[in-house]
Length: 129
Image 1: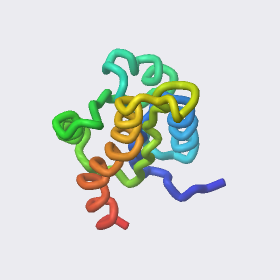
Image 2 (image 1 turned 30 degrees about the vertical axis):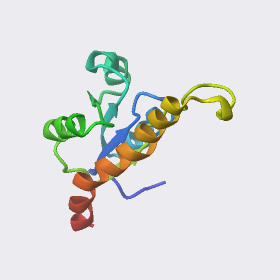
Image 3 (image 1 turned 90 degrees about the horizontal axis):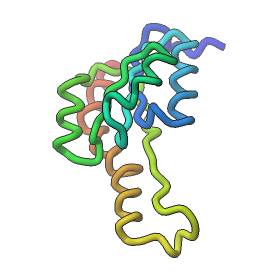
Image 4 (image 1 turned 180 degrees about the vertical axis):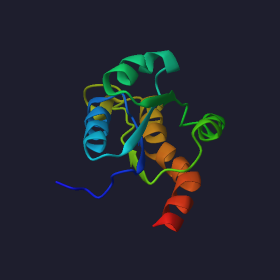
């Protein structure tokens, strides 16, 4: 199936997890260039993904403004596709028993980091169609 993304540049957050890795594989199969990031890892922790998939991987503290600014300085904003697959599940078990800190951490990583990333990434993507 031709997805019409050959030659496009894709950014995948949560690129070291199962959903992120499978997304990257599909993009590569379709002829796109993929860059992955992971919020909860150090740069060297992404080496297995680099080796397995042969792509660029950059760790980023995306939930913080300073971390996001640093990430954008390294990668730029010249992406055609962005998949926000970053996410944590907080404390395992009963959601009613999750601590306030766990809920805030999950909200910050799962949702707010996506909002923060949309601001620098989306305007250029929209302009390019």
